[in-house]
Length: 77
Image 1 (tube, rainbow, N blue to C red):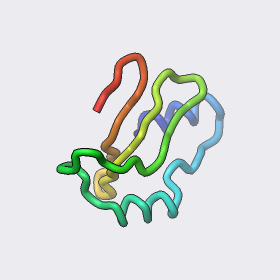
Image 2 (cartoon, rainbow, N blue to C red; image 1 turned 120 degrees about the vertical axis):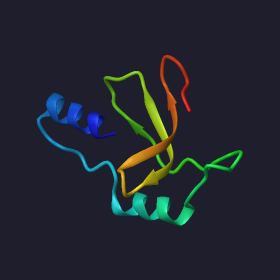
Image 3 (cartoon, rainbow, N blue to C red; image 1 turned 180 degrees about the horizontal axis):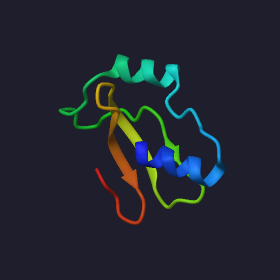
Image 4 (cartoon, helix red, strand yellow; image 1 turned 60 degrees about the vertical axis):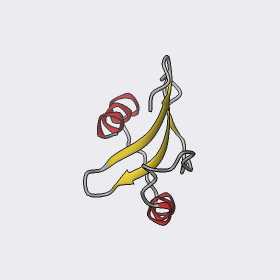
């Protein structure tokens, strides 16, 4: 995700706040979903010039890493 934020900075010469306090509260409330068969998608991240859309289901605050689904040319989990 850090690479993606850097790419936005280069393309638009500005930064966006992608992880708001409200979204962060949702991640904290939902917690670990690694053993859940049908996890809750917390939000949607996309870029109009990209073919990928990211649907995070978890966020590790210590590492700043999202876990979830990526839909693009190939679907990733």
